[in-house]
Amino acid sequence: MLPVESKFSLTLHQKKMILEINPENIDNRLIEQCVDVLKKGGIIIFPTDSVYAMGCSLYNKAALAKLAKLKGIKLNKARFSIICHSMSDLSNYVKQLDRPTFKLLKQNLPGPFTFILTATSEIPKLFDSNRKEIGIRIPNNAIVLRITELLGTPIATTSLHDDEDTFLDYFNDPYEIYQRFDDEVDLVIDGGYGKLHASTIVDCTSGSPEIIRQGIGELN
Image (tube, rainbow, N blue to C red; front, side):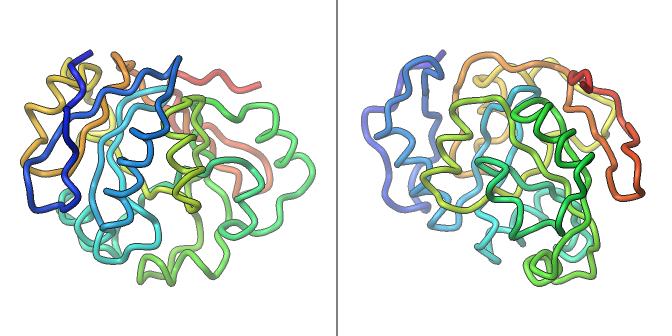
């Protein structure tokens, strides 16, 4: 890990930074700094239980548009997933789950999965689109879960890479990630080396779960 910056900018127009957070002994003051960036409309890169990801506050439209621009798309075409703190947050964003689907999520979350679920009317409003589905993540990573808990809302998230099947070495090294993205994002969290395998994507919108991308997660 890299040394922690001694000072943290209170505006997003000053020097970008990398912030070291120990997932085994989290300093809440550092989490507050991350949340401050998100509340100000910043884009952050953070560890998950699979690859590192980038994201912003779900309820900051300017940040969502900026995140979409970084991916080279318009917001209404974006297919960002959202990271929730716990399953109790899901009711605002997905329609009521049937018993088998709820049991499936309960058995596998937190974990390295993205579950595609039928969205509530809240999702199209947030993304200026006609989206009927949303990807839900609850990673087994203490840092990002603590951030979403303190933020009080989910993080809209997307991968660092453009090709879903291509992962380069720098995707798991926070220092290399910082060197690559420091001009594009407002904060990189160094939470230790990440993994080079993405989450497993499971589509639950058609009655029975279907794995549409086998990643690091083995479905129970």
